[in-house]
Length: 97
Image (tube, rainbow, N blue to C red):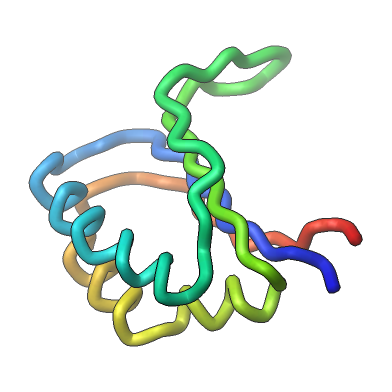
């Protein structure tokens, strides 16, 4: 079964307090969903048309578990706390077998 990944690139942090509140709620929600943080990249080297931005990579045992963790009540509370505190590109992607 293919793994699932959350990929989140933070373009702009508009409200550090909202981001901190999100982080306090999101960490346990991700862990409860079986997620493992692989990278909390503050340092990013880009090539081509890439944009140097903080990028987070979280791995789940399956794509379905990644979706379920996102849809969980606990993670939805974290998103509510984040609100408009950041501009980010968030994706859930399926890995290869």
